[in-house]
Length: 299
Image (tube, rainbow, N blue to C red):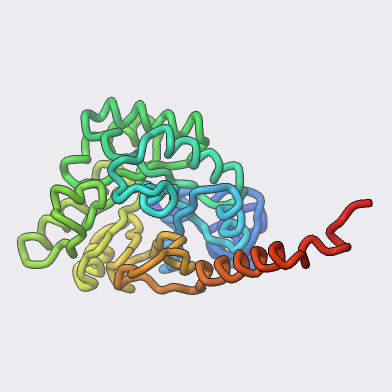
């Protein structure tokens, strides 16, 4: 049976389920438990109306922090190109880069469902190419699902992956890998024709077997409609509060990103300023000779 057509899972009721919270309510949240979150847990969360959060992660240490915090799903996104690898867009990111960082995220976590992006050029050629690269990420990196962009055009690839046992998260609306075709990062789905196409795409990826779909930079009203008409969870980023879940790039969320951030980002910390302060204090103490002090010294 395809993942997108699974019947709603029963919410685990005891401490043995990764969806069971400390109070046994079946919540996706609640700290460390005995197994990983699964796509069935996400289906059960939608059935009971529970919203959940997803963050990107690109290394073991940061992923471990988010895992301990209770974030149920982590995305090893090709956004690593912008915020970690120094590229201007996500387009140059390679399979080798995704595989290496995905493996680090898996090693750094115990509970979160780990989803890895299929980067640009790794699935557009054919469904067979998509399957080959998705299997590589599952076997080499140990991820639990993959994400790919596109609606109707990507349906054959989604269907082949799901039939082969690879859970797939779809991605609609603003698709960053298509930045050059889109001419930038405009809001998608405005106007009747564009809205109807996005809804068709969403239903198509659901029928192909996707277990979830990201809606990026989509008018809130349209995202809410899509959420209501699908039985798989929607994950919003710049798509309003009506989605089943939300995702942010962690460097945006934590205030590590320099300069302007998108309108849909809320910065929950200012880590860039704090790291800069710590580095400056360290530099000053080294220059003045106050570090290392006696307590940092061996004899």
